[in-house]
Length: 366
Image (cartoon, rainbow, N blue to C red; front, side, top):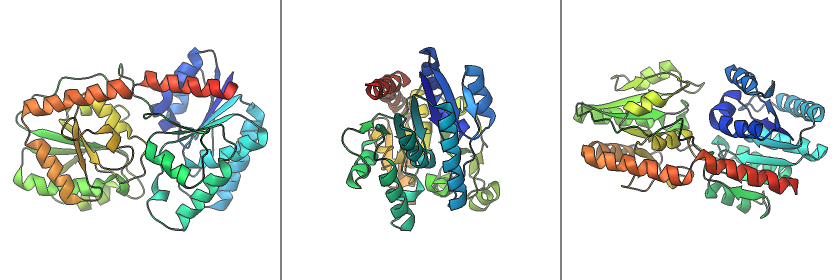
């Protein structure tokens, strides 16, 4: 069988779904990756995939570029003639579904999160909802990573009962992100944020919280790891962090060493999340987490058991939870770390996600 997977980044496709792609290949399938070429394209080719470069502007609103994307997808899908298509991220999901409907190709779309478009009640949200509604009518399966996203699509008339399936995240490989002993460091407590540097990920709130806490608790250390963006550059980070309260670690392909030395992973996001990868990685390695009470994040936290939930966009709430974690004894934090691992290992494993993919493929064959 020929399986085609489309996304707006090769890097994210590899980082989040390499295990799924490998399972497709192990099962004797031919796999085609359609995404903008980058360093991960070579990794896919080494696995045995065919890679096709895709011209896409993920955030842009230029209609001419989107028409070009639509035509490129038609050309690629028509030439490759896949048996099944999996599509990820908003533009491939919307425009790709129009093409697979025309070409009558069985299709499964993953809603990896609602993103920025759903943060405000404006013309952009209305436009995106309309495009989802038009494009998803004949799609075989629509995969959600949390129940709130599925409910949103139901309420807006985008999905029907037979289409929707919710799985608990995209799965975490526990043989790659192995549980590590909790760091027994009494000199400092490290709070680490791992995310793309977008305002909606709560970057500024994290820096402001660090500034407040460092004045009272100099032994508490704050670190930030992630790729800069158009919205947040290194210069902007320096403007926000005038007192050098947060150590910026840059972007790393492998984050395990940084999670290992951290005492808690923080993600004060108010972005339209699916299930944040950094939180899954943290729990898999046995680290407690602090995140916001929003869809995709709240499902991962049992308050006081494996971490804390704070109010989105609330600096005071974030400061309160970080201080609360820092005031715990070593044994209390270690217990929370063990609980974090147990929660992820029971529900969010890559094996469980692979089984869900197998069920989806079998349902589209019949």
